[in-house]
Length: 464
Image 1 (cartoon, rainbow, N blue to C red):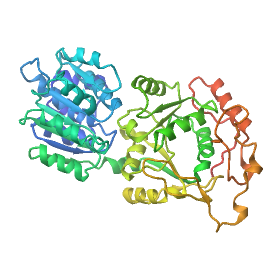
Image 2: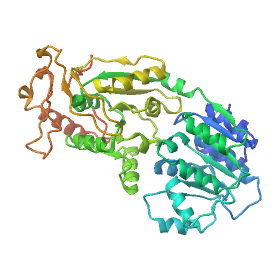
Image 3: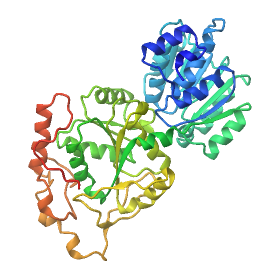
């Protein structure tokens, strides 16, 4: 179904046409008519399926057909700063041919400036829960005239511990309102929230997740934790497109960034401890191709929209199987094909089992030169895995001592590291590139290719 078949205002159709919108996605085709009818709607769809347009377009159409008001009539609450900024940008594009106004309030930026913006007429307000509650408590923002409330990525907001803030926000809006809840999953907490605050909602569930997975070439690499960096370097060497690498923790993201930077691989990092200005800069550099690699935690990356992303690397298995679908879905936007690579150590086998159970398929296993040989302890939730211990049932010849590889990836001469790049338990040293070969390889690519994509220069592939 095409957008022009909807009974949307001409201003909206002109804007969507200019943006290249033609065919609607499944969530858009199912949700927009229901929202235009005034129903409360629960939309269950994955990231990257066009949810923003699904709720924003009918909301804008409704505002255009109402008498103008100086009150804020629409509130969109979303979990992360990046997603809030993205929604605001999309709404402004959709309303380019109108007099409607949209603004955003998020944490991590100057509050005084936001208060000054709130003094102006705002039709549509996009906000993250924490900053919105702060301003509500200070009586700096008024949401008592809200006609439509949108809770986007509701499952993520509740996972982040925003349940009290969300209820506080909802209770400050009029009881007579239209409520739209969009979520990738429907856990018990989201179900209870919908029952408490929504009026006879219509639930819409798409099959987009299954369609997206079918379009993605998924590969699985069994590898010890201390060899993940070496395997990653080989994969980046073979890859010629922009890459997002997902890790479990903020500490892990920073550590991996330092390792890649030591090989002159320009890297951007996104996680919750980074200042908003840094996160905006990092994302901009990645989108513009200044950096070819973006390292992110799951929460910080939620909602990031990047076109033509060729590769997603699951450096760590996610804590929740559903996050796997979120991660890999970023490389198959708008019906395009994509590729996802997953690293799995012995400590992460349980998480892999739940992922394959969720997607109802076995991920294709790829053999490589760093096969898994260690028995490692399961990582603590939100923490880091403990030091791996050797499986004594293995043959001694399966693993060679670090003495045989003291020159491989050892940066102690040029970097004051903590030994992050040493190979404790690597095997078959003849198959390993030396430190100088890695550095020279990535330096050559950096100098010869202005687009910063990694080119394969005379090195043989190591995957079989």
